[in-house]
Image 1: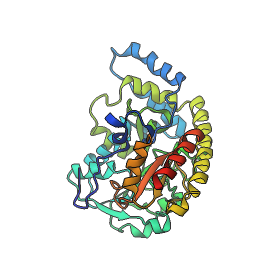
Image 2: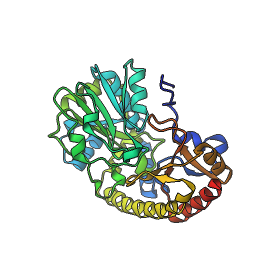
Image 3: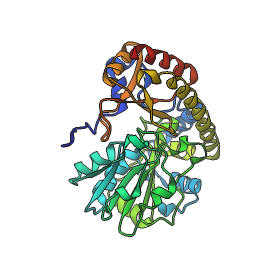
Image 4: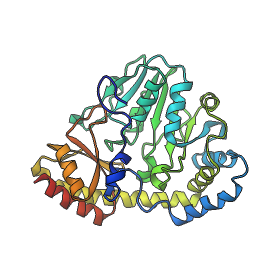
Length: 350
């Protein structure tokens, strides 16, 4: 879908690895490699014996609430964060919605599909895509921002985000990648003192569950009730509910924390290699805090096609409002994969 400003809001990284791209090394999709783990697959498989019964989300909802130290009334389970964006767009009474870009494009697409006129606040690469709360219109009654932000990998300070909150405004913070940040620094998921706060979480990225559609909303009880009324019956499948319970259990949280530190180390290794390519005009948005990095480089579209010839798929940046044809997003993988990618990128740049 194109807006009057041009970017294709419905383009996502999976398009890079479909069909002819299926054999490429996937650096375009931000899902952790080697997932879901064996123990999680077993939990999901065990749920298949109960498929004759309608899904019952109470246990999964309680597990999410316990994981964040919240009452169950503040939790809504969804078929991935994408469903949550649609519910917000359709269920809330909104006069002036604002989306802070560059960020994941589905929130704006959902708002436009629901008939809303969307305003964009475009952060600038010149200052590292940092958020200035004063840049958001004072009378905006819905503000959506990612943290850490896809595709910039910027982690906004929690204080900057909470300064966006005020009575009469819904502040939506997409924390789909927060569990990939060591210690979940700057997270707002467990805050109940911020007026109008809605936090979205996804289990897709860390646990490799894109095909199962697993996510949840954390918000005030009245907001949860409003969104729940807009859902169809039984919106989350039994296998997805089993996965939710498993992924918020102590064992899974410990594994996710370990994975976050490993990803941070692998990202640092990648950034060291990318720094050697600065003489070719390559710039990295930083400090990067998510399991991906955003690159600015001359003739990026040609480089992306050359990388495909060399066996690597990366995410084009021109479909994100606020970016353009000189940007690419690269998912962080293990050091061996990253070393091969840096060599291929050096070849593509020359």
